[in-house]
Length: 114
Length: 161
Image 1 (tube, each protein chain N blue to C red):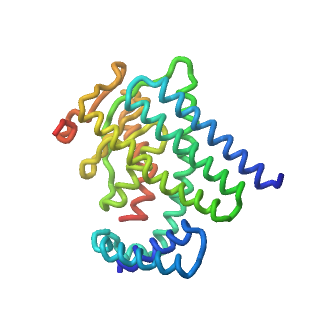
Image 2 (cartoon, each protein chain N blue to C red):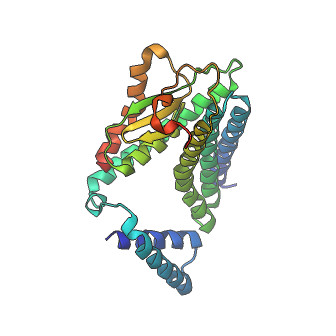
Image 3 (cartoon, each protein chain N blue to C red):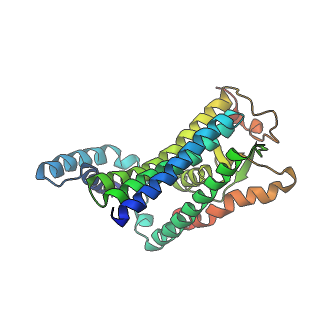
């Protein structure tokens, strides 16, 4: 195999590893807000790694460029999705984990359900 | 001006995504891009005076590298918390104040905060951002508040404000 295929495989491997860790976090963390943390960070990074790996593996072809275009999309949309879910969950009245330290969002007008 | 910018951007994006440069692809993409550009260009608040300032792009490049570095750090941090048998968490929600004036800047700040270590933006109220934080030490609140925002704020101000 050429060197670029090895680099691609390495990126894909790291990406899959972090995706798996993200899923594990989704299962292990206590409440929805902490789970979203694991879900957004690890899964975004892991998926970006996989897409970069595809770019290296394929080189600058139609396929590789499409993978590259996916990265900014993912970086822009995944945090927005997490934000919407967290805000929606808070407004729906889902409580924080009982070992949470503080909550300053209750003071805010917009934290209450509409 | 923003109509032309948006159309051009969409057209280039279309060509990259389509992956070939037949005449038909170029024409269809061009017509669609101009159509969408006319529909939405006026509603896109792009200050073209700022968009052509080369210094802002330079700072954007620096911001990109710092952003990528922070994302990598964030991932090892979360991975550590996931794998640790005792789950070292002490989560909570706190607010931070941003210096940014422009809406674009705030959007990028909120996204950047979400993708970096242990923080998730829940809501934005004018210049206040409500952040869910995975590990809070109650006696170091002001340090934490400063750490979350200052990291990106000083670059984003140079880019967007």
